[in-house]
Length: 226
Image (cartoon, rainbow, N blue to C red; front, side, top):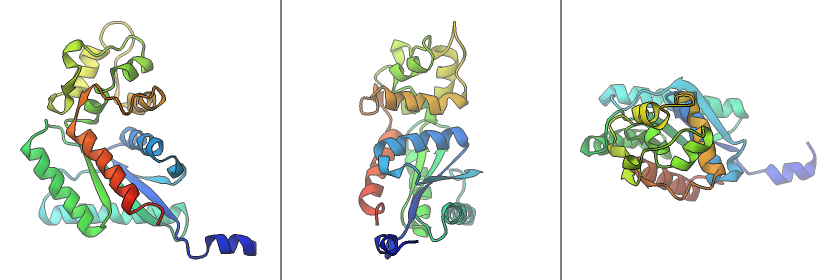
């Protein structure tokens, strides 16, 4: 290593953003969204491969599960490059129920435990599923498969109130000609949202979508580039 390079890096701690989720499709979707918001994160987002199961956990069980995730986050950061710290952690999970008081309590319970143990983590609990986020962007869905179309009755709505958004995508959006929606389409849908310029123009609302972006903004202000 040259002396000039040593001077550039001395005193600077390497850092990564870690993404955890229920499966690879969810993690890749979050990764694309984070990279779009913060292009400088490209190459600095790493993933925990194991599935997340937090929203039904309480007490000691929740504490142990969060600790396990944090240990894995530190492990993948170190594997990325020795001496690397976890700048921010995003843990995604589907709530599998509609928005309401139970969602708020569950989100607060888990996120508080994550922050108690790590100090700078975000619980991305989607209502009712991440598919509800996709329904906010009908144009992007049509970009993925031309025949996919969100029925008018679902436009401009609070998609967090849809009890079965995955079913809407399978039985209504992708019915008829063309192929049916599958969970493996999720990363392509969010890439279409980004590439189409739809990210800041959702056709409806979803509290978990809004909360996710507030977390992203908070993380950027408080924890990144330190």
